[in-house]
Image (cartoon, rainbow, N blue to C red; front, side, top):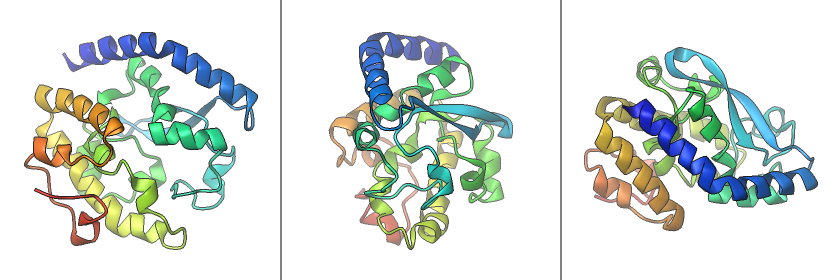
Length: 225
């Protein structure tokens, strides 16, 4: 049934958003480095890799320079148009194709690179690999402002590995354990809600049994119950 909703909803989204998608394609072609899509290998269900689609928002060689796969606030590798696409999450919309191809779901743990995925504990890796990665999920909702949280390039790698990644993994495992129609549709609703009200605490209220963040993250995640 989830696959039906994935195909149905992603097809409708592509149809409705097609004018916007074509406009973004045109802008990207005429600006920056002329690249339209950014393709990168990510870990999917069963630890199988697939090519994830995004609109290009950064310099071509970004994964090999600066902070690598971690993007920080005011990252100099982000192109001018890329800042808008990333802030509005429009850069993620090409993943609707990944959903149609059956590589992703609308809702699930965010697909990670092998390097970032390896930062999870073995327990978390095994749990996450049981489901398809998602266009949105509880981890990406809670950490929707991750680039601002990781604002200092000098500590970004260690902070992500020791503070952010463990808690994000706990959230993704929570999704796997609580997966169902209610979580699926409420995650879609909350995703749209926080796009327009980014400071909202709605996720904590709707999903009352979400694991609490560590003390280091409570303030930056606007946590309250």
